[in-house]
Image 1 (cartoon, one colour):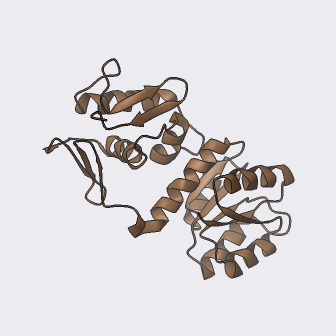
Image 2 (cartoon, rainbow, N blue to C red; image 1 turned 60 degrees about the horizontal axis):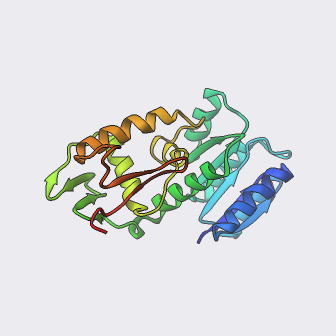
Image 3 (cartoon, one colour; image 1 turned 90 degrees about the horizontal axis):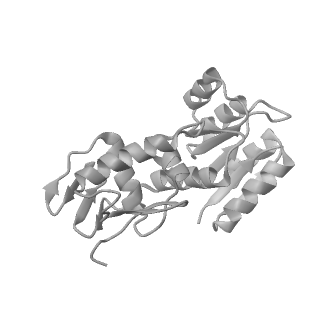
Length: 227
């Protein structure tokens, strides 16, 4: 699906991440040193870079600046550094996302999908339709049976993510990563509250669902109620 460069010196993490992304269909090349990683970034033409900050030959923030000097490829930083100043500095230096170790494979995969979807640009449809529900992604507008829905920014993003993966069960961890972009994860309660508000605006409830269905212990999915 995508060429991914992985720059990580921890053998176990490198193996875990490479195996998980390869199973998703991605072509993963890895390096355990910053300068090797820079060569991958320049010569390998990756569509996404995953990189640690604590590299043995060069600090990852410096490597990120070097990559940004020659490429606009999306970068997800994966690191044990969880201090606010490190997160802010790294994002300001050009990272597109920041994931703190330890992290789940599901959250990493969700963030990779989100970054690739955004970087694909014109490959993402402007409008997504599920039954009588219509979402105009570019205009950030949604309607149900031609009636405009009054959605908050997070409600719209939640609906968009579910609509783009219509019929597919999406876990709450994935929703937190894709919609809230929480670097430390987050509370399932956040999802539950917004799902409740969104269901109310769609004229349904958890007890009488139409579009948004809960798969207990797994997640939620958006479906066409006529099917």
